[in-house]
Image 1 (cartoon, rainbow, N blue to C red):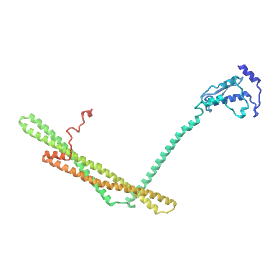
Image 2 (image 1 turned 30 degrees about the vertical axis):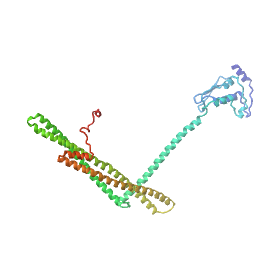
Image 3 (image 1 turned 45 degrees about the vertical axis):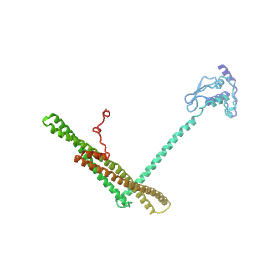
Image 4 (image 1 turned 45 degrees about the horizontal axis):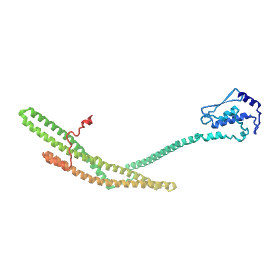
Length: 391
C-alpha cells in the first residue's frame, strides 16, 4: 500500500489552480480532509491532529487548543482517501468553497446537540443578567427608602427643635390634649394601686402560710400534751378556720389584682401607644406644613413651583394621616373611660365586700361574695407542678 502511494506521488502532475498557487492536488485534498474532520471530527480542546506526509517519515502536530468541536468520530471517507481508495476531489473546489458530502451532511443533521455551545452560553447568561437586574432593583429600592427616611427624619428633627426653642408653630387640639394628660395621670395612680395590691397579696399570703403552720403545731401539741389538749385543740381549730377564710380572701384579692393589671398594662397601654403614633403624626404634619409655608414664601420660578407642588402633595398625605390618628385617639379615649368605669365598679365592690366579710368572721358572706362575682378559687397545691412536669 505504501509503494502504491509513493508511485502515485512520484507520477502526479503539479497543476496550477485559478489563483496561481502551485500546490499539489494531494495537498489540497489533505486540506479538504482536515476541514472535513474539523466539521464532523474530534473535540480539539483535548486532542491534537497528527498528520504524516505522503511518502515522508516526519510527522506534523497541529495544535488545536483554540478550536472548538465535538468528540472524536471516525470518518471513513477521510480514511479511504488517505489510503488512495477513495475518489479524488476536484481541486477547483478550492476557489468555489468546499461542499460537504451527503454522508457528512446526514451525520451532522443526525447529531441533536451539534454546535449548541453559543446558545448554551447565551441561555446561561440570561439568568445571570436577570439576577443582576433584580439585585440592582432591590438596591435602588432600599436606597430610595433610606433617602425618604433621611429626609423625613431631618424635617421632623428640625421641627422638634424649633418647637422647643420657641421658633416654630405647633398644632394643638386643646380638648384632646387635656384628655391625654388626664389619662397619663390616671395611669400613674392606677399603677400605684396595682403595686400596693400586689404587696398586700404577698404579705397576706405569708400570713396565711404562718397561720397554717401555727394550726398544725397546735394540733400536734394537742396530741402530745394531755393536760392542755382542749386548749391546744381550740386554737388549732381557730387557726385552721382563719387559714381557710384567708385563702378565700386571697383568691378575691388575686382576682382584683389581675383585673387592675389588665386595665393598666393592656387597655391603657394600647391607648397610649395610639397616642404616641398620633403625636408622631402631628410632628410630621407640622414639619411638612412648615416646609410648605417656607416654599410658598420664596420665589415662584418653574423649579420652585414644582417643589411647591410636591410639598403640597406631602402636606396632604400627612394631614390625612394626622386627622385619622386624631380620630382614633378620640374614639379609644371614649371607650377606655367607659371600660374603666365598668371594670373598677365591679372590682372595688368585690374588694370591699370580701375584706369586710373576712375581718367580720362571716365565712358565708365571704363565700357568697366570691360566687356573686364569679371568682373561682384554685385548689390547694394547684400552683405546684405535677410529678409528670417535674420529670
